[in-house]
Image 1 (cartoon, one colour):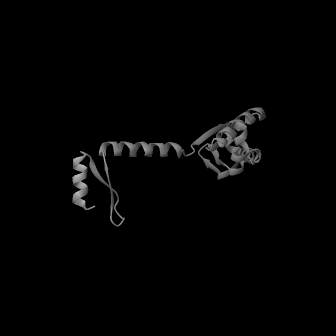
Image 2 (cartoon, rainbow, N blue to C red; image 1 turned 135 degrees about the vertical axis):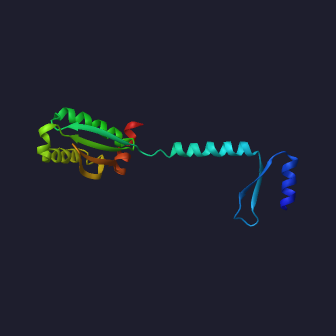
Image 3 (cartoon, rainbow, N blue to C red; image 1 turned 180 degrees about the horizontal axis):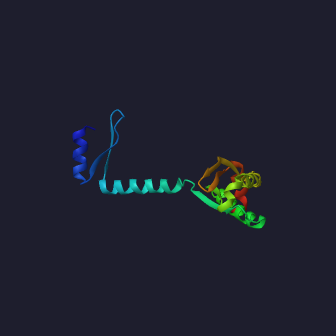
Length: 152
């Protein structure tokens, strides 16, 4: 129908004429309530944002003198974060004279990488920032497939 006929039909129904697809030949329009249309559009966008959850960056801080059992508990928490799809920054912080033995921090991060080898892969190499030595680990796709039946 012509543009004039479409506008008259919209006015007769006391609704708005909204152009849906301007690139089409002829352009596609719809007779809708504009306020309701915008409300539905924002609700759809909110649903899409909610479903497209981006993994957060979680952080675990460790001291250089952490005991083995304490480290295992922290790594269990890291595995939980990775199974949820989050990235994890593991930071080893140095106190006082510990700064003179940074190689111990690198060794600790190496053992952590070995223990987490099947759950995640290193996303960012060890990096020194002030008194903190940190790496970022993200989950690998095999870990998600492997852990999903256990959590359901």
